[in-house]
Length: 440
Image 1 (tube, rainbow, N blue to C red):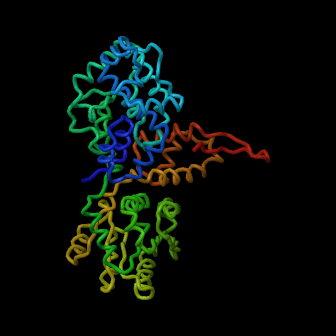
Image 2: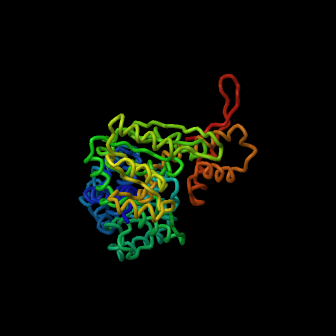
Image 3: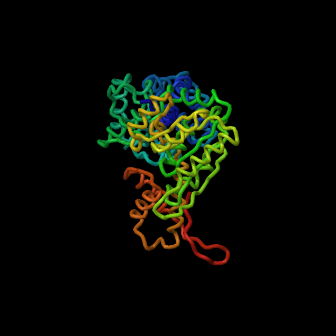
C-alpha cells in the first residue's frame, strides 16, 4: 500500500531541509512545494528553523566569533545571510548588538513560538495541530538548562533527526520520520502517548493501479464516468479524481451521477470540486420503498453508447446487478470502481474471468479532499443555525458529521467544534435581522 507525502513535504520545508531533498520527498506534488515557497508564514518558520539548526551545530564557534572578533551572525559563513536579510525585511529582527549564542537562541525560539500558529492552515483539520506545533516549539526556552539539554540531545543523536535538522522530539531510530504521511503521524502521535489510526486519509493508490486506469482512458475514443450514487461514496469518488493525473482526467468527456433523494448529501456539491462536466440525474421513485437508479443508469449507458457513440465507461458501483448491463453491451468497454466493504467475491471473479479490470476506490485516500468535506459540513451546519440554541454544540457536530456521512475520529470533530462552532458570530444585517455566521 502506498501513502501520500503532502504533509511530510510541508514539514520538510518548514524545518529547513535542503530544497533538493524537499523536491525528492514531494516529487509527486510540485504544485504544493511552489505554494509553500509563496507562503510568507511558512518561509518565516523555515528560515528560523534553518538558523536554529545552524546555531546549534556551531554554538561555541558562533559565540567565539562574536566575542573575540565582534562578528555578528549576518557575517558568518555557516548562516544563510540571505534568509537573515529577508527576515529583517519582514519585521523579524534577528540581528542583535553585542549578541551571544544563548541570546540568539532565545530570540529565534521566541520568533518561532510567536509565528508557528500562522502555519496551522497548512495541515488537515483531522490531525492534532498541537502535536505538530510541538515539533517546533521548545517549552521553557528562556531557561538555559532547557536549551542546554536540547543541544546535548541533538548533538548526541543527530543521525536520528530528519536530515540532521533540529526538531523538538525524543529522537530514536524510527526508520525515517518523513518517509510518508502515515509514518510521520504514527511517530508523532506515539511521542505523545497517543495512537494514530486513520491511515485511510493518507492512502495513495499504487502506480500500477493508476497506470491501468490511464491505459483504459487512452485506448478508447471516448470515455464517461457513470456513478450509482446509492452504491458509491462522493468523498471517495472525489479523492479518486483528485489522485489521478490531471491530463488523463481532462480526456474524460463527462461524469453522470444517478442519484436518489436518500443518498449522501455530498453528491449535491461534487460538481464544484471535479474538473469534469457533471450531469446530475435525480431519479424519482414510483414506490417509496423501490429505487429505480439501476434501471435509469443502465438505460442511459445504452443510450450514450448506441446513440452518442461513447465507447467506454468507468462505472462507480459495487452492485453485482450491473453485470447484466456489462454483459449486454459487448461492443462497449468497462472499468469498475468498487468499495471493499460492498463488493462481492462473486462479481470480482466474474469481472476477472471476463478480463474486465476493477479496482477499489478505498485505495485512494481522502486526505486530498478536505475542502470538499468542509463545504458539505458547512452546508448542513447552516440548516441548524436558525435553531442553534436548542442544541448542545458538541452533540451538534456529531449530528452534522453523521448527516454528511463522513466517518471521523473524535479529534477531528473536536477540531471542527473549536474552529467553527465556538467561533460562530451573532450578527445583524442592515435591516436589523439577526443571524449566526460561520467564521471560515
